Image (tube, one colour):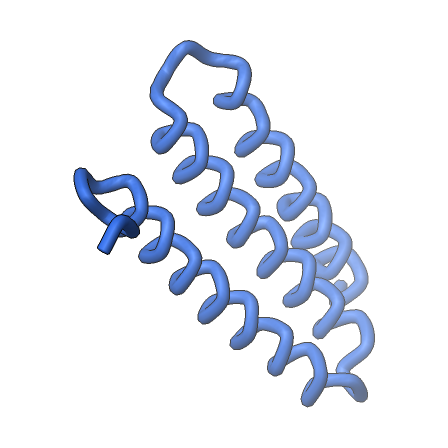
Length: 92
């Protein structure tokens, strides 16, 4: 049962990765494309890491550190991109 849930989460993560890549082909703004890509990439990567956590629980300290680092890094990167995209942002 745990193996099925683990593989399901890893599969869901891969689906999120491809789902975030799909809007790159559209005609929307670059910021919309970056936002959808970063959100789906973060969710997909977190789902894969949780799936690995269920698969190899003895490595929980490293996998939890990876989850926390992923959440912090992508949040900060989103704020940096938003700041740089505002008018006058990054030109101080």
